[in-house]
Image (spheres, rainbow, N blue to C red):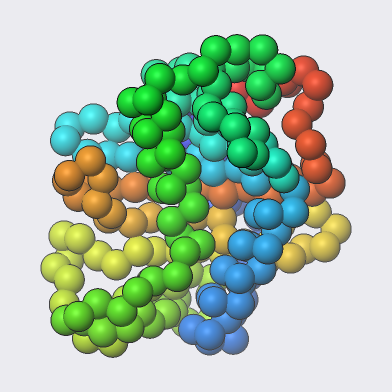
Length: 212
């Protein structure tokens, strides 16, 4: 997992062209475009969760109608739309159903991968969510509040947007660095996002690079 996270970081920070934002409102436009793109074809989230002295990581892939997780313990699970989770390395063609606890854990990982794309409810103390441009004129933003009060030890979620490395050069969410609640504690979470161009269904055979 560490090798994959390093490769993801290297690609995002040095391999992709930098987007240039007009202002904070641009972040929501790019996030909305990312949400649409994630539903249209292959969507990948590679995450690391630092909490309670451990750093489990996982990979999440989805195509329209099917999703897959390579769990922190290395086991591979697949779920077709409307079906339960299965332990399966061939996108559900063969495998066995996941037990109830494992299925709940997998659901939590899916929620974590998609959390940046969900609407943020107003906080009773801090108010509504607000975008703040972390580097004026650049592509990084913090999702703060109307009345921010967080301590420096647990800053607000940090979002980075980059151009997708294909002919369209569209700008999508590529990295989230956040402190989120996870298993009853505050965890430091990194999630890297990828949107491979032109992939509408899972491969017949997993390629070597398709594994962690």
